[in-house]
Image (cartoon, rainbow, N blue to C red; front, side):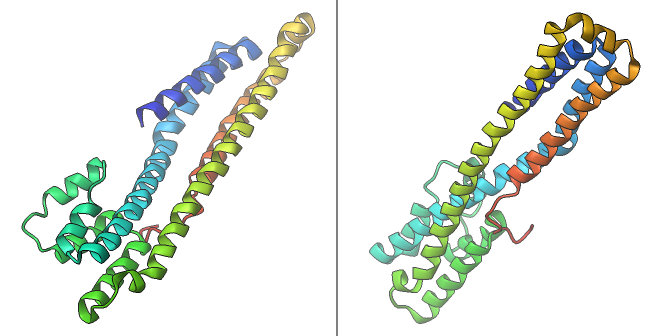
Length: 234
């Protein structure tokens, strides 16, 4: 999250600087900077944390379920399946599992449902209960589950790819808009200076930057609204 926070502070500095050059107003520049910074730490940071948490849980559950089922089908050992499932570099998952040493494998697996909070994990627990009650071929029993895991992972990957594409387009469009405004500022210096003597023009230019901040919020909402709707807590 530090990288995202630094990025938004840099964007706020960029917008504040652009606003200053466009309006010759320290007040408008400062307002633009602080509005975006406050907006980020009050609203957007929470969205990014939730977004990254969902991504982490979906990827981790995909690895855990696939590794667990495949290992169980090969070794027929719940303990080996569990240990292979948690063999992933994930600090939060490791923290959760380190405190479960006194539980049975089934108790540990069921305890983790609070960490994953995904409907796909509930499907996994249902398959595991069925396997315990009736036995049989775990791969056959979990066929639909594994397909759903793959679909969920692919949907998330596709959503990230589309989101990154739209992010590039969003940045390019606003950079072009800012470029046109600053081009007018420096190329039509005398005319532009005359315009700025009218307070209404300064306010309208300032509102242009406010609209930019609003559009950033709308984009972040769309970007973090994943196509994968798997969390039972949403």
